[in-house]
Length: 192
Image (tube, rainbow, N blue to C red):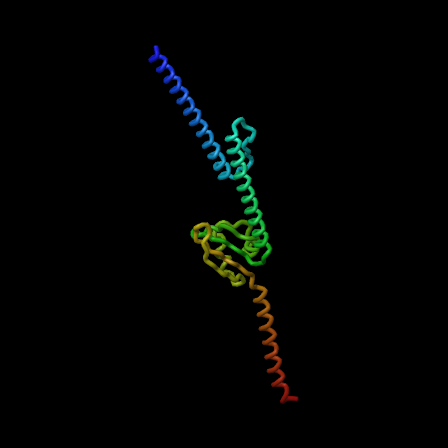
């Protein structure tokens, strides 16, 4: 009878240990799924979720509070980055110099409003759209090489130099008139 009682006690202990291990494994898997959900949501830019902090288990509450803190920190960082991007975009759109950021395949990654105006187009996606327009003598073009997100890009600055050209043309006309006036006066002086 003692042997049977010992076997029954051992079986009960074994069943309890197996049940506890199964519960711990399920708890562990649930927590892993929560962390995975957090990273998937952040990767997709979704910050609308919130983990409940009124759970029965203190450990779950601590985990949920920590995951919510991570979410808030990353959400705040992303909002700051977006605000900075808007700020820089406003600065780029405020200048009269056209800016094009072009990748190695001649795809236009970014541009400002001045580039659209100078190139007389509504949409810029590829350099083939504007190759002929870039040959215009009234556009000064300055190109710089840079690395952007581990990609080699070209930054092209465009300026309208037609105003400077017309100023130079006016200056040339004034100089020509002065020379002609001087020559005419030279030839008239002996006559008078």
